[in-house]
Length: 132
Image (cartoon, rainbow, N blue to C red; front, side, top):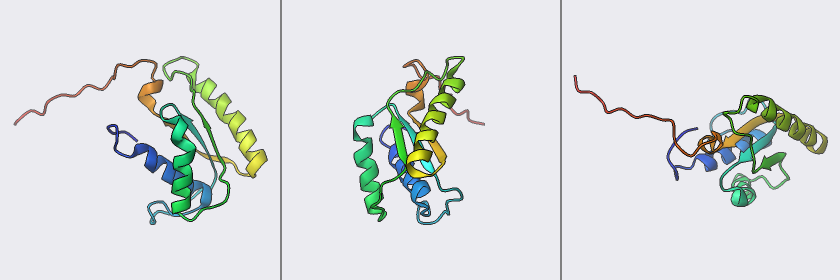
């Protein structure tokens, strides 16, 4: 998901995560096709992540422990070995989640990508619309 700060990207991601973990329809409309555990790379706002997830789960009527794992670190995505490093992290988390919850990982989030790009300068260029 892309969007400006404050447009509820993390809230939507956490709500979708609860739906995937608890097999609930996303947005009370869209059926989850593969229930599973969630791995979340929380590169911003990690301190409040568990509390936010709990509130969203409670709002949806989910009171049981959910198969959710998170990390506050992630390799820079511009590194040549980033994919391998992410796969190693995901495999380790998947083994833990499978052991603890008997559930495979179905969803992985990286929040926020621009933070993990390895730089603070955005690479998005905007161009003014031309009149025809």
